[in-house]
Length: 310
Length: 303
Image (cartoon, rainbow over all chains, first blue to last red; front, side, top):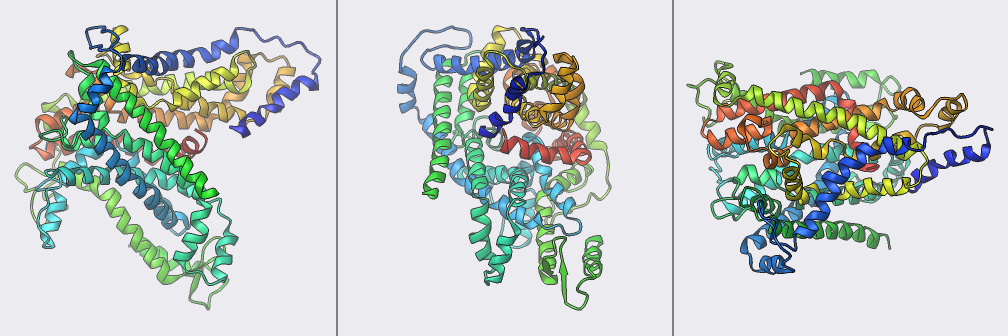
């Protein structure tokens, strides 16, 4: 942001340069330019955000305005088994997905970094899952991981036997994480590619001359050079992972499995707050927890970054 | 095959060091042949992993009703390819209506995002007025709000406006994305100010400067905004799932979820449905890759 404010400086300087003319800008026009954006963002993002914070302290329902109930919703959360299941699953999701999404796309970026023949094709192909809708991706993997699907056919062919990827509670969560990682690989690969392009070649060459192998060079040259990007990817992917909805919804079903054991927090928000009997107040309280954890995750990642600096 | 041929071509292309068993890349760094072979091997393995699932889905969608889709070892190619499943999916759910709904939503999202974020971005970058800093802050705050956390309140807001269960309701919350506004702002900030200054001296008013000078110079970023707006709307799931209740108004993603829930036992139908949903985006991506990649960079680094 610091760079952008300094870029604005030439505009300020132009005043001093003095063109000898009086500014004839209509006073209302800047607001005219910004108004549509401000309206949309105000009505559909910021107002719902504030109203979520307010509703969390009421017993509002879809059709009933509700009243202020203080901390009752949050007290209820403490004793709500489903909430703890959701919190557990969303947290596990972060722990499972983030390390994979920080490391694997970096390796992938190194793989496609060198301009060898046909590499543009591979880069594009690896990006394809990013373009597809999460619903398409979810349904493709539901079919691939089906009891009788391709993965199990292959496992049976090589003699491993069939695995109940979608029937076991933990395997399902793990499979959903794998799908999230699979869909995100190409996206973060492109981010890393941009970062890698800025790594001075001389560093690699110097390390090579010093006799560092590929693995040593990865740790001593590549990782330090792209560390800020790794932090960025860690922050982006952890926030996204904690808010996971679609993958688990599609693979485990709307109820998160027979007893809801694969429910994530956002699934719980959706299930609790919608419909004609939706408990808007209670769902808002869960949303507040989502906000708090999201912010905490961001701070945690940024702090981890600063500690490494010291 | 063609890849293998290209590999063999590569050493020949390097004339500088014909005697050594080494090829060099475009920066003059040496590449060993075995390393190159390993690289392609890995690339092909990852290719199978990333694109394979789509190909398998396509293959499933083309398999006839009598063909065993569960065989082990699996049969990768359909024995007698048929489009029968595509006809059947249209008989089961109004898939073309859903696709049209998705198209309407996506197109509207592109138009509103391009117009709205260009206007607001220009105001933030180039116009001087009291409250500009506050306006910028508003967009930054809005960008930081996790949408998943406010969907219930967005839904109640939509109900208050009487727009729930309408396609307009699907479009509205994201119709001018804060992130896009900030992207456009950065694009305008990166333009040299002198040109606009010259136009200002020549008496061009703010609209002329915006439309004739600034906007044509940020076409690239505008294309990025357009593409991501299209993709975002076409692929979105959670919000339309919440706001739409009437099956007549479903978008393609919601329709697919519905199809999966109701007819989960017919994998061929679901496969055909997913191919219908993903094909347009893959085509779009194939044509406009440059902007897709550029969008990732701009969105992640500057946003």
